[in-house]
Image 1 (spheres, protein in one colour):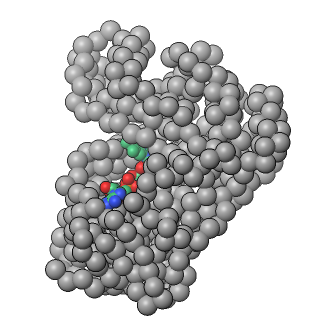
Image 2 (cartoon, rainbow, N blue to C red; image 1 turned 60 degrees about the horizontal axis):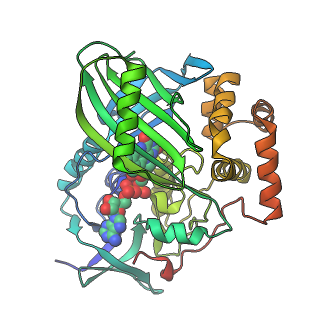
Image 3 (tube, helix red, strand yellow; image 1 turned 120 degrees about the vertical axis):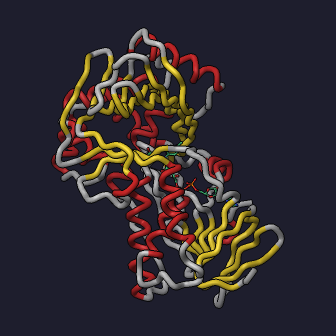
Length: 402
Ligand SMILES: Cc1cc2nc3c(=O)[nH]c(=O)nc-3n(C[C@H](O)[C@H](O)[C@H](O)COP(=O)(O)OP(=O)(O)OC[C@H]3O[C@@H](n4cnc5c(N)ncnc54)[C@H](O)[C@@H]3O)c2cc1C
């Protein structure tokens, strides 16, 4: 196999494959490209959902789209049409197959399976070590992120929570789901000191992805997620017979640890590794698409230094406040989400979470929330001199995956 390429993409997950797809649809499509991952044999390991009012980046593979969103807790249900937004779902397997099918038609694109042991660069070249072999390129796009390294770099200066979930795609014997409404959060479950809720995405009246999600620093045993799912389905969805078609398990970092957002000239971080996951929600899919767009535009322009935009600092501050509350006072999380959804319009919340609100709207949103936890969080962050914003750090070569 050749060892010198124009570009190497390290990690063929959402970000790596989104970049490969965008490159293959651009004037850079003939660049010699190597894509490395532990495995290119992808399974349906995740579903991506997001809200948008723009045209979809992948219209061919949108599996389901909802025009209404709901929020439920002990105070009741809020349900609302979200036009001009749509809430869309793309299944992992459809995404992987779609992108690989396009890439297979290009002789200049090479796939390699193996563990990446090191990525580094000199002034002239970047290189990557895979299975004891070295490959060179002008630029390497690195989307491999290391959970434990990230967690250890959080130390006392930053917040680090986990969004962890187990979901079942179930089919029921009777029609029980409202097909046009996705439930973002249903808090009708014991909170046990954390934020715990169910996420329900109906595919049809008899089929839905039901996910038990927790924001906390510790994972549960698999059986705990499964028991909670069984109870929720029985108590809230209905006493129906159901079959489990698929299971989805995931952990997403919720953190304000500074990821590198400014790259070295030749090694460009990408995806979750480059701050794509919003700290307070874990949503990353659209941020990844935005990163990829910015990267391809800069490559086409011939920019030496590739940068991707980070959140504006006031949103980083809001995210840190929420993370602090989740970390220190998880027991009040449900009431914060409750007041957020009961007292604000769904579309305003979506705009806020998309970081598109005006300052006065944010002031209004915060005025509706319980004051004490936020004041305490503010005081404790200041007192302990904890960081509340991501810095723009240059990725060092020591920061690579082990
Ligand atoms: C189950 C699940 C569901 C999610 N749902 C949503 C959602 O609904 N909406 C949303 O916006 N976000 C969601 N996310 C968050 C985020 O969108 C995804 O995690 C997304 O896949 C991140 O893309 P990425 O490319 O940064 O990382 P990944 O997709 O995880 O890709 C990283 C790739 O790097 C490879 N890799 C890592 N280390 C090495 C190594 N040393 N050598 C070789 N290869 C390596 C991995 O095999 C992997 O393929 C979800 C996450 C999970 C886990």
